[in-house]
Length: 448
Image 1 (cartoon, rainbow, N blue to C red):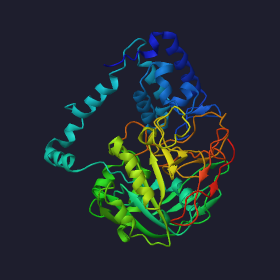
Image 2 (image 1 turned 135 degrees about the vertical axis):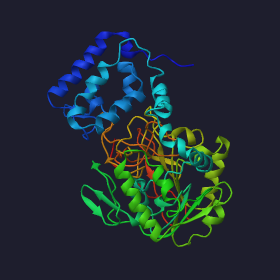
Image 3 (image 1 turned 30 degrees about the vertical axis):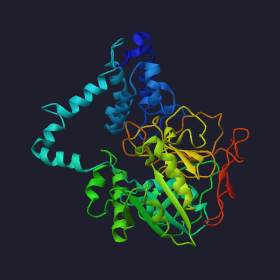
Image 4 (image 1 turned 180 degrees about the vertical axis):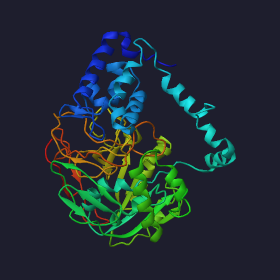
């Protein structure tokens, strides 16, 4: 059943309020592209409308406008020529009639965008339909975003070196190359790459001084991709308009083509132990995955965790909150669907969530202990009483994402203090040597 979404909750005065506000910001030259949502009395189309950071999710309650339409408004605002963009938010709000039921507008727009005989996507593919059909039937979403390494790096560097990396659900293995890329933080640059992933930092964060030492790397995937023969498919998985992300992908592919990591065809439920056993015993084995376990039946997931633990590896998991809920400790509930980064099962970070947009190809991360997260990002440690909506936009490109849950690019990493679960604080549990109990080292980002 479709739930009605009544524009402006049926009240013309609500429309007048926000239309007047957005026009005032436009007149004062406070509508800015590529600026962030809302800060210092200025912002993007949505930020200036609601005076809030990460405002997409607020549109339904404040304006009676679906969140999907908020993303469309923001998408066009950021891409129009500046002179046209400044008029766009008022035109958008003016076009919506108070009391109109907007619940099916996005669905109808999507259908038109696909099948309209004049402007629809179908006009571009009709002659090539057999090829499109073949691709749809034989391919699957296997997004491979190397920029995730930018916020995984502090966590990887906190472990005893050297490392043996084993990624499950590795696609083409681009995230198996964190030591080959460059990273740019505000106070330091770690040379590697290109690509070089920028990462903004606010507050104390355990930033590494050097790249990790990786002596062994393997991937495990049901359908391994090649950085050479499957490059076109990997490019097709980058969302339209994300040109910087596409450029990063090209640079990462060049590195992988020159020295491709070995990706083994296999099932993580049965083939992981044998592959892990081939890792060198004098390196810290790290098994990691992002947006993978959701594709297993719920009752199969605990067994995978047991399998990983049995290898003696350090375990880095980056999954949506419901995926591991009920059999691993929960991260603090912030009311979002943000991914949770875990070290050895303990929540240490919260990854990019649906409350932020995709147009910059970024990820937002709140860290509860040691650093690490989903994408090139903004690393932030700040007080919990601050505004919970953080600057930085992105999407967690796990397979099967929609709208906004995407984790490649600009984001935020937020610290939450030391001490194991007392006073609302959380300790990040590190480790000592490979194969030993993993309960010694604690990395913190300051009290929160």
